[in-house]
Image 1: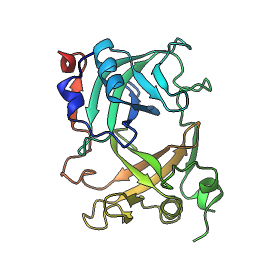
Image 2: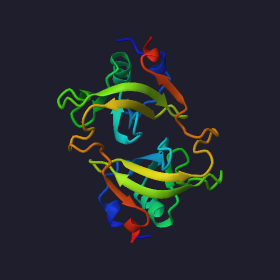
Image 3: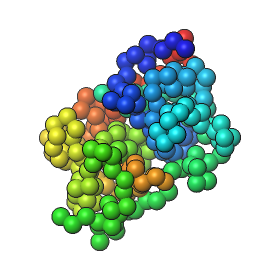
Image 4: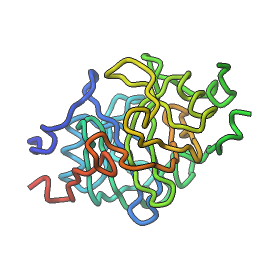
Length: 115
Length: 115
């Protein structure tokens, strides 16, 4: 798989990874943050299915391969430093492995948490 | 500054940092991704002003201290693994140091980028 010109502009960390913020296209909910290497950035763009690098399993992770909860790619943006990605998707089912819609269900509201 | 119970549940990386996705409360735009250490998580919650750890300057960075473009904290959530934060803010002025509203202005739409 040949890497795209887009991939070549990205700055990966010393593990060869880049963090990816995943946002649902219609509700604009932030669903999760995951990591990609250059290969999975390319694969994500070529297949249109969000594909990450699993740091815990140390392997390529096509989101939904096990759960069926795929993420269809709408767009991919990089930030001003080229070291973070924002992936806009259309999520099938729950994004989180816990079964929650997003991985950020544990919110605290300022200033309650500091009291 | 005493750390809050919330801070003590977080998982920091081997540099003592945690990534923070910053989202504008009304438009739900993802503005930027930055990093916090335990001290700046606590400071953010205590002051209600988004405060990060600058990896390039190696110092505490109160967002807007130089630019005036503060971020007023609305809420802070952690993800299912407790190793990523989602900070909801009300941003004054531009979020990005480039003067753009967000740091993610360089989007590509699937599948154009791979062609």
